[in-house]
Each structure stands twice: as C-alpha cells, then as structure tokens.
Length: 257
Image (cartoon, rainbow, N blue to C red; front, side, top):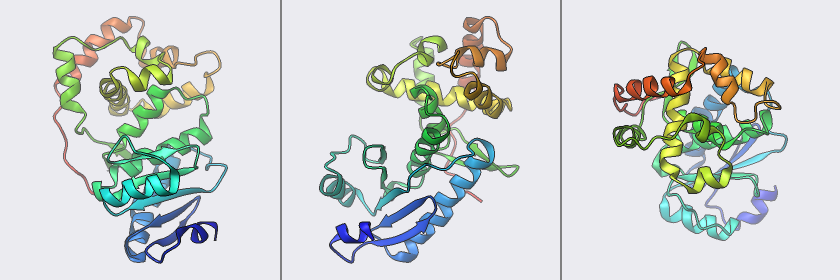
C-alpha cells in the first residue's frame, strides 16, 4: 500500500514474491514472470546452497523496462544517478533498482547482496561481489545454482598476460573504497573467477561455511581459503590459478531450468 501511494500512476504492476515486493512498469504478467522465473528461482537456489536467513525487512525490487525508464525513475523515486546501465542494490532505500531490459543477470547478481547482508553481515567486498558476479550468468547443474564463464573473462585473461594481477591476500584485504575505486573491473573479475575456481573444485560451499564460522579471527577469508584449498604457498597457487583461467573460454547466455 505504501508503494501504491507513491507511484502516482497506473503504469506499474506490483507482485509479491516473499521476501520481496516486485514493482515494474511492464504488464502484470511480465512482472510476475520476472518474479517467478528469476527472483524466486534465484532465491530458492541460493538458499539451498548458501543462505538460511531471509532479509530482516521487506525489500523492494524495481524493474524498469528500458534505460530511459530506469534512469528517470532512479532519479525521481530515489534521488540517484546510476553509475551503471544495468542496476544496483541500494541499502539506504532497501531496494534493488534494475534495468530489466539488459536481462536477468544483473537482477540475480544484486539479489545476492541482501541475502549476504542478512547471513554474513561482515562479508568483505571481494566475496560479496565475487559471489554476486559469479551468478550474474548462471543456470543449474545437478539441481544446484551454477555460475558460467562470462563477459568478465577476457579482461581478466588480458590482465594475467600483462602480469597485472595482484595477490589474493591483497585482493581479499581490500576495504570497500579500495575495492570499488581502484581497478574496479579487475577486482570484480579476479574475485569472480576465484569463486568460479572454488565452484569447479567443489569447494565453494565449504569455503563459505568455513569463512562464516571463522570470520572473527579471519575477516578477509585468506586463512580460510588456504585451509580449504590445502595450500601453504599462495604465490604458487596464484600461478596455477592464472594458468587455469587462461584455459577458460567465454560462455554464452544460459536459460535457467
């Protein structure tokens, strides 16, 4: 009812998909499909493998039909000028604000953030964005959510060839300002493909649980990573990981089951 009171027009459809209220300027049928096929699907699968708690508060998911609508309404409704054409999670407004015309990948990425916030409040930026980025192109494998290679791969491979990749200890110890403002694209890509590597080795869920359990004594996750990987020399591991990443090929859009 609060959302209806501030819309001021009948151009929006509202669908409940707990713990979210989904609002979109497409038909009710289209908004309901996004709510069921993307939001419910992603939340169900993410909770199956990683998260046990829903966000403490009802969150809004705003799905705008194109770039013009997205930018106009982000400004009018939230006072924001988006820095990305895809979408973002606003903790201040308790809302996900998405240009759904760019596809559902950004929506799944941004759904990770409020779930991570509810289940792992101390999560550092590298893992928060690594997990979000991992599932921005995803499907299912053996009934579990599965991230595929995506558009972030070529830039990461180029950085590896040019020997510009920082150590994992440095990446994982970055505060938010450093992670988001210094070499942002490479930080996202390195974090994503570390999570991808863990996924491929069947270690991602184990790492998540170890990291959450040991967060007070290991706030960056670096010690937990070494333990789960069974590694003592992370410089040698980085060399092997880089060689592994260079063997990967970019995936294609995958329709979720």
